[in-house]
Amino acid sequence: MSELFGTLPDGTPVHRWTLERGGARVRILTYGGIVQSVEVPDRHGRPADVALGFPGLDGYLRHPGPFFGALIGRYANRIAQGRFTLDGRVYELERNNPPNSLHGGSRGYDKRVWEAEGVGGGAGVRLTRVSPDGEGGFPGRLAVCATYSLEEDGSALRIAYEAVTDAPTVVNLTNHTYWNLGGAASGAAGGHELRIAASRITPVDADLIPTGEPAEVAGTRFDFRTARKVGSGYDHNFVLDKGVTGSAEPVAELWEPGSGRVLSVATTEPGMQLYTADHLDGPFGPGDGIALETQHFPDAPNRPRFPSTELRPGAVYRSETVYGFGVRA
Image 1: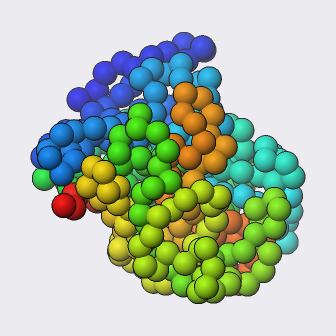
Image 2: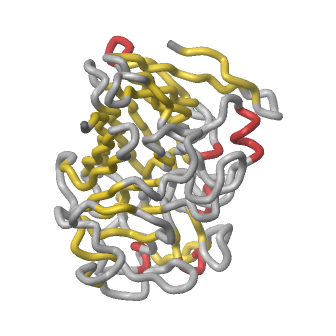
């Protein structure tokens, strides 16, 4: 189902698509590809929205910084000094997170209106957009498609990305939903228990740029190989043990003991940014949500030893992440 959600200051309409199957309901906005809400039941069958968001468009316009629920691109995470070199040419990006570029700049994909069409007989919505050559400083005309689909039994939300370019470029797409399995209005999420199948992280400097080679998590506060409480103070990329894969493989599980809700994450991506939202603004307080951003590594265009984010004409960028919903007694 599609409905008018609001209108931007320039008069552009924004629509909301609702996917509802098997007791789950997900709402997607054409503005920023935002996951506005995800309603799933707790262990007693009581539904609640577990994704932080706003009831109206104005909330997203007034609080753009946290990227609530948004589709992030052309490059998710940070690029050091807002600069990278590709095929011997230096490209300068907006330094919207001084001194670095973050999430594609101040007008990244999260602040664009996407074309939308229903797919799968109402099971999903496909968002499409052409990012022109030079947008945000990135080379190449990039045609992007993001398909959100809900499993028939309501057990999972699948986000599949595809992109093609007419010139060499870099691409790194993700979704920036903040999860709170106790309910979006339930307060701090630090008591959730998290497990991540990652033996290493990419250590970062004070500006959250990787300092060099990945480091082992053993014996550190980054060791989530066995489930434990999340706490706070995380904005780090975890190097997933599975690496890049052709199909989505399980990499993480988040559990909220009070409600019994479980969120599982499977992805094709080699990394996952754990962000505990310690600086969240708007009606939500610091730590009220947990972002699990599946992606390639930060600053990969400047790090030849990291998995490549380059995309060239004739190739197709593909990425898929599946958020599974369940309960535990």
